[in-house]
Structures are given as structure tokens and as C-alpha cells.
Length: 213
Image 1: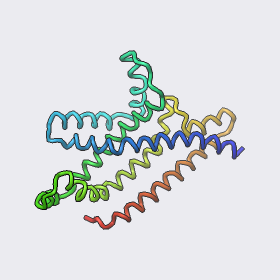
Image 2: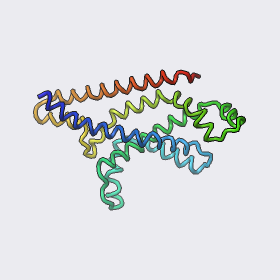
Image 3: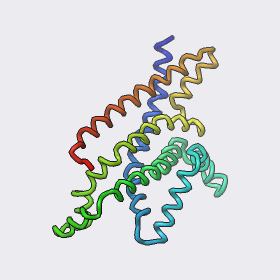
Image 4: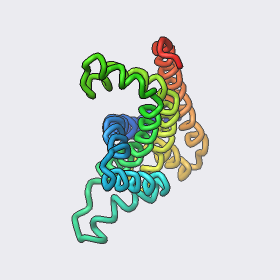
């Protein structure tokens, strides 16, 4: 029984892994764009972006999943988007807002003197950001980013609310057969995956140790 259960859980874990990977692929760069908006000197844009981030961070991801999947059809009479597409959209928007605040904090923590020194050397703003500031920002935000990434591993289970067959759903399906241990078995998948991510981010931090302060 162990092998069939493992194979079924691996099928659910594959869906979990897809949600996780695609969310990071889209939300990490989008979060940087959102952070620029929240730091914009154009007040209407800054207020709009900060307001949007506040709403997304202040409401449950589960609610956002439901609204994005059912909202367009119920409010505007539009055809429902595919469940997986709605899941990635909701997760991407949610995590982009969280990442944007981490990016903003990291960027604003860099002393202004470094920007001024770059300008004295004749560097453009983009050159200063990518050649002087960016690696220091990465060093400073790596720990909070890693926390959010590991949280994402567990949050993927929320996708089941709109019918995505992920690993928790796969484990729970065995309860109907009188088996509870497959549900606990899913925890091992999460622990191993989170452990590998912890090791990865730990090594990344060591590689960036030459940026201190």
C-alpha cells in the first residue's frame, strides 16, 4: 500500500510544485516593479500602489483566490478562467505585494551616500542601481525573502479551495478508504522541500557574506 500511496502523493506534489514555481517566477520580478511604484515621487501613483498593497496584504489569500476565480463571472458575466490560471494569478498578486515591501525596505536601507558617490563618478541611475545597490539589497533581503518562499510552500495547499488537486487533497482522499496515515505522510514532503530550500538560502547567504553592514 505504501508504494501506491506514494505515487498518488507524488502526483499531488507535482501540482504543488507547479504552483510554487510559477508563483515565484512571476511574483519576484513583479514585486520589484510594485516596489518602484510604492516609492514613486509621483504622489497619485504612490498612493494607489500603497493602497493596493495594503488591501492585498490585509486580506486572506483564500479570499483572493475565491474572488479571482468566481468574481469575473458573478460580477461581469464573463466566462470562468481555468482554475490553475486563477490560482497562479491570485498567488502571484499576493506574493508580489509581500515581496514589494521587502524590496522597498532593502532599497531604502542603502545609504544615500552610495547613490551620491555613483553620481559623482558619472554613473546613471540605472547603473548605480544594478552595479552598486542591487547586490547589497539582495544580501539584506535574502532572509525575509527566504521566509516568504518557505511560507509559499505551505500556502500552496490553499489552491484546493478552487479545485486544484494538490498534495493535501491527494492525502485526504485516502480518508474515505479508512486510512489516515497518508495525510500525515504529506507532511514529510513539505518538511523535505522546506529543508532543501533552507539549505539553499543558507548557502546563498554565505556567498553574499562579503557585503556586510
